[in-house]
Length: 169
Image 1 (cartoon, one colour):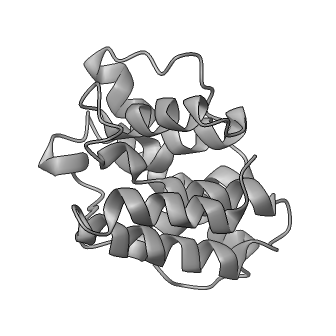
Image 2 (cartoon, helix red, strand yellow):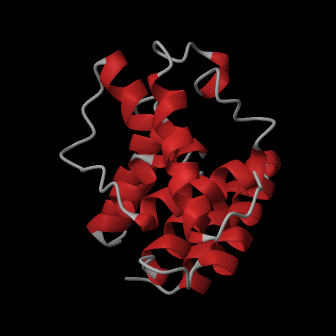
Image 3 (cartoon, helix red, strand yellow):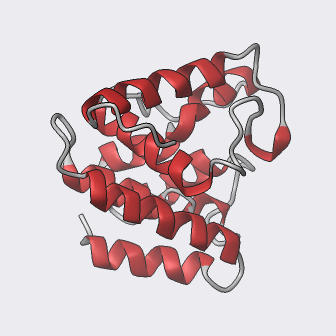
């Protein structure tokens, strides 16, 4: 698997010029992942890799299906990234709920529901809570009966426990 440095460079190449808001979001998520990577039960490398690569599916270079989490995971597969990192990117911030509602097949990438996954979701929320409200899906679409919000809240709650009660986000 490519190094964190190589992954960061890839994300920067894909996002910095064309999608600077997503590059800023990615950088913030990666900073938070580096800060939290040593929490109990969290696997450092998959967390920091997924955090720095979470928005690559938004790049015109990677976009194919119109569903950025899946596009990002597919893009990473072609580039030799670990299947676990692909799955973490595909299932970021309860995107599996939206994929299910929209009839999108995530290509057998399973949602691992682990402290690593929950911590990634935390990192995404810290990076851009204002742009990722829990009452709507990406781009302001509906929240599918609150399932996405509930899944995200569960991940945040479990990560908060790992952090010993820290109140952010």
